[in-house]
Amino acid sequence: MTEVLSKTTAPAAPAADPATDTAADPATDTAATDAATEAATNAASDAQVQSAPDAAAREHAAWHAARERELRSPHGWLSPTALLWPTAKPGRLPGLPGEWWVADRKLFTRPVPGDTVVLTGEHVEPEGPTAVGVAEGRSRIIGTFLPEGRDDADDEHEVAVEVVLRTGRYGIRPRDPQAATRTGFDGVPAFGYDPDWVLDVPVRWYDEPEPITVGAAQPRLVHHVEVFGEVDIARDGTVTTLALTGSLTEPALLFTDEADGVAPWRILRITAPDVAQDSALNSALNSALDPDQDQDQDLDPAPATSDTLRLDLNRAVNLPYAFTDFGTCPAPASGNHLPFAVTAGEKAPR
Image 1 (tube, one colour):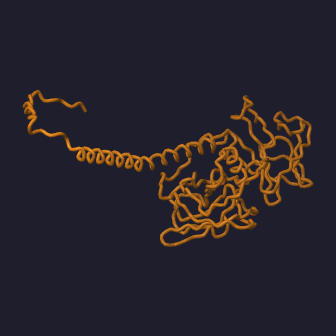
Image 2: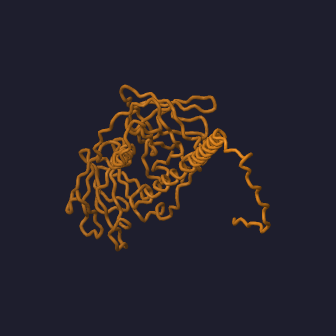
Image 3: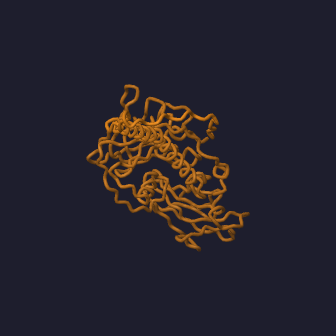
């Protein structure tokens, strides 16, 4: 707003009388300067206090956007269209080229003469058979194929074939970039960012990991995981102890809670404060934490030693099972339930 000056002429100041006027008091000037400095400092401090939540909210928004971009990737967790279980007898499987069967603790596939759609990939034998092995609880993409009616052989049109091993059974999960769950995706619903859900909690690391067995998102499946420690979460006068799985470098907290509109359970991945923030390592660890990720990771994590962990529950996310019916994700450890509503993080996407 522009300030308009009055045209009225102000009275002239009286002339100074050398006999009566004195010099300014240095003490008064110093006090005034100190007061001005303190006021400026307080104003800057107030601005920092006000901007800190804004900065955290902006950082969270950027993180959430990156999370959605990852989900939208052509063969990401919005693309699975089936979970198929081949048997010992070679045979066709719905929507897949060739024949598939299990023998000698491996999965086999071979092309069928006359097929116009074939599986291709670096490790696929063109004439067959191709043998595939993965470790329990892990998975790998073995190749891709271009369904009939699609002309462009690229990531947006080719179907990737993922092989999983769950509870001793081989399964196959096609990942189709044209799946309705991906093409119709318009974002993950989530609670608004709330700094009150950023918690610094005590942690107790175990001297040795404790192996446990947990359930899974699919019936008749289990996962064998390790507990590396436990955290105490206090709320409304109640302290709840939860088990940490994942790894010593990036612990994972799988939990249930009392909130409405969320998936049956969610996961919070945590980076211990005494572990360097190496993006490549963290990316690899994210795969290692998720049993539905590729198994070819060579990890040598440094153990966490901090006695406190920061839990930003605004970053509690859905596991793959929440987006389609074909996830085999592990369930939380027994007792990993928070007896209150965690109104932070992602909501149920469907």
